[in-house]
Length: 164
Image 1 (tube, rainbow, N blue to C red):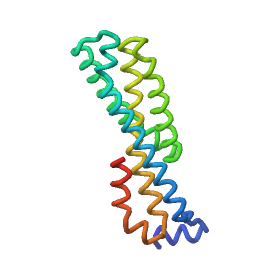
Image 2 (cartoon, one colour; image 1 turned 60 degrees about the horizontal axis):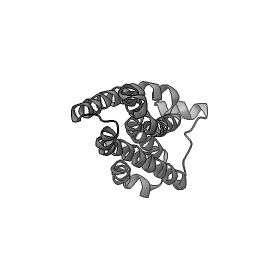
Image 3 (cartoon, rainbow, N blue to C red; image 1 turned 30 degrees about the horizontal axis):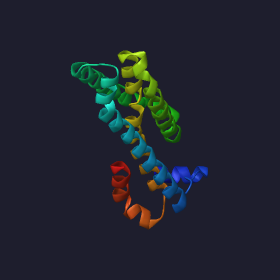
């Protein structure tokens, strides 16, 4: 007896998603990734201007960028186990909301000093962690869809979402 037969005997069946629900979730994932990447790239682009405003040397700016990259990687790696506990949907909400809050705090973080700015931008790594949550969530919802048009083009759709 396979696992599927056991599941059928208990009466449990996975919820079938409508194509509209799958498309809606895909758009949410797309915009979440667009905003996360935009925020990350924007900080790197604006760091010279921020440094000029606070009279930071190029060496100090490079040090900030390096520590932010390290902190972002640590945060992105630490989110995986947390999302496993929270679930994909809550994980997306948590990572996108956290990234948005860090974006807002970046506006005033430089005035608090370099260390708070590094901490804020490192926590902004939630936006990069969102990419893996997106990929997992999209894989799950596309697997739950029985629309052949969606399942046939899911690789292409994933590439569009991650291309942001």
